[in-house]
Length: 319
Image 1 (cartoon, rainbow, N blue to C red):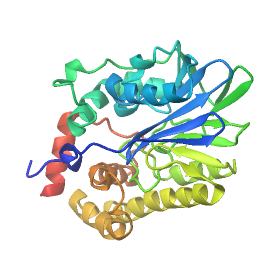
Image 2: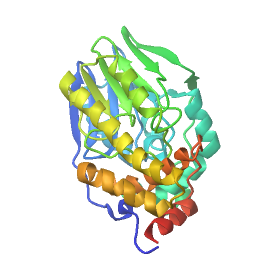
Image 3: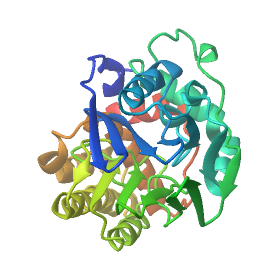
């Protein structure tokens, strides 16, 4: 390759924040690295998103133990991506929840994603020299199709599939007593959306279904916690703009028979002025363009990313 993926050169340590976004509800954030949510119930704790490795999950647990000594009973995974799920073992949660669709994606492409993301994100997998050394695939103990509720004592937590977006199996987690939501990577804040396994045409509609909840706070997939309706709605608008601004120019190139490199140039012209300062923007853009190009040509199910496909795609964009 003529040069490395941007993510391969991103080795700087990120500053961690732990923000209370409702009573007993916390957002663990780290300057554009994957976020984790914490929901404290009457008698136990639910974690939302596991982190990439047990080492990183340990940083979450340290923060949890600063605010509660209640046991961790549930781990909810909003989708299947390796950097979200491979730290699961650290929590020792007896119940691990995914959507049915997310579980099917673990079976279909989890091993390939694990290898691909290990190659792309060396900082998140620090301490693991080979892909064989990192944790195995994470499997849920419980799945659901559209909706389910979990009770942490008297506190009810509602899990829902609202539509395809970042992946085909994304779920959101709503805590009605505080009107707070954990959205995973459907919503980002001052961080690029990773769309390499996404559904561009569906994503804006899923965002509007989130907006309809009229929540008071959101813990997004990446970026700062969103506290207050103004900040929530600004993030929903910005996420929709990012997705649309990426897809529209790429689709125009693809449908007229243009090359992937031409689509890349068109996406940069559209997105660079608005989003180039966003966290992981350069990390995501090549994968976003490749997926947008495929979707514009009618490929509904995202093609599976492998370490080799990553390299082939990057070489095509450099050429």
